[in-house]
Amino acid sequence: MRGPAYCTTLDDAYFFLNQSIGLPDIPSTVPLRQRYLRACILFSWIALEETLNYVVEELVSKRRLLCEPRGGLLDRLNAVRDARRVAPIDQREFLDARNTRNLLTHATSGEVENRLLTIEQARRVFEYCLKVIRETYPYEVGIRI
Image (cartoon, rainbow, N blue to C red; front, side):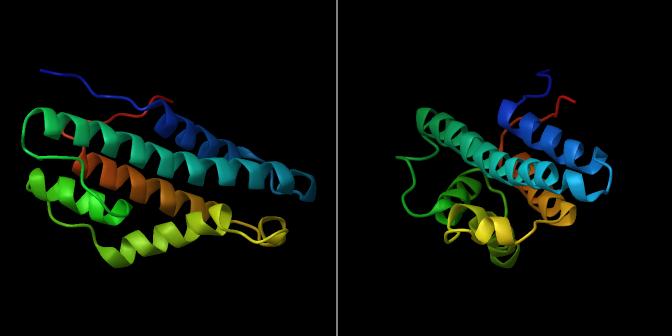
């Protein structure tokens, strides 16, 4: 039996989430907490895309997919999930998590500094990406603390 698979970027996302939680709630920690929360959110999405790419490669090699799925991330995830006979992504959940990520990746000048992220936002994104990874990836996925 195969042991759990690990994704270093997922481990990093978890690390940064926990670092943000562990900071004392004082004004001087706000910039560091924001850095940790941004890192958690971005690494969570990177981990999701990394594992999706691995699954696509494996499914193409096993001829369960004829070619790499086209379209956006949601389309690609659903194509892979269909090939693996997993239920499609809940679009509302996906858009909610993606909107939090988009605050960082599509922010206007100075917007990131003016809008403080919360631990709860980062936790929701991390848990969402972890859930989708575990549902989509063909092997057990663990997190190294």
